[in-house]
Image (tube, rainbow, N blue to C red; front, side, top):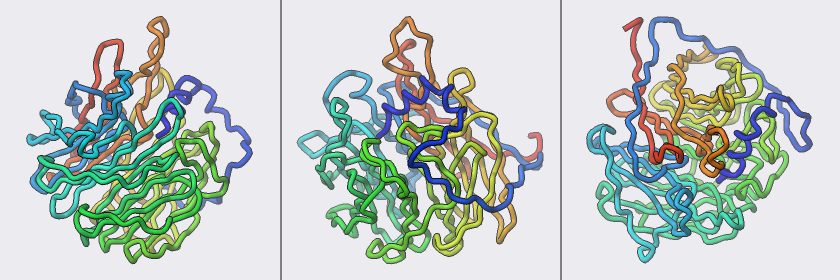
Length: 435
């Protein structure tokens, strides 16, 4: 959870164009080639957004059920209302995202709690997992991680408290093909790991994945491999462990981990200069290749490992005329990837989505980007006499491959001046030639 820093970035964004020499930053060597930009053989189109107006869904996530139902979760209902009540918000669509209905995930008496970072995951058998964080905005610290599980497409839920530790932060949940559910989070003293082998009925907390750093991202592979991105910042930005910038991979369900330095060049600083950072995404494709996706002042980068993170091939996908930040990545099949990121500040601020096709060996991947778009998301607490300032309303934009071969992106709607709160669903389609 890093909303306080997000607001700072956008208000002071003009400063990030300067490449400061910052104490505590790590600079690692960058190697590899340049990606191929797609020709006019195919392109991406993005539809006008489908808006659902109700309560805001900051930093949302989207998943698809095996029967085609879509679920979107987010947070911010308490944030924008000023209430202290913790609200875990989840919506369901049974018509491909055209309309949405809020789901009753339970009450506090049932163990439901969450007013900050969330994540969703769908098991192969259709079990839905909903991870939540309770955050104390007055103290600027997390205080609880919970996980909800539904085996009937969201109709009923079982909730479990995984942690009630000061500085709890940034949960992620994924389900491996063998049915094992993994949840990670951090608490300022390392990256924690919970496991369920019975569909979320019971949970076991394993030894910490790493004794320092933050839980930046989690991904599971086609053979139930688990990859965790560990970064310097944790505890909602209250702690920074300089030099901790690694990828941990387990091939035995999280019993043991092999850790390697993350590929690429990144500047890390508590104030987020020169590039804001929080989520550093990982993704496995269907053949077992592991991908890392990131941005820096030199552009947008992708690395692939064919040996579970031991070695990497790195490409610069593209330069970015504006500072690019807050990336996200998903993968499937044989090197089919989709990515999102933000760029620019104030008048140049916009969001991006791209398809990336990765070949074999050292063949550069091919990337095609849709036209950029602007989520209806603005700073909430600015005085009315101030001009509106864009707000990412989170540290990534979720993108999801659907079973019908299309892509969807979900962005928050946070527009106080026009009394609009909720989320937008953007459908992205691959088109041939000039069709």
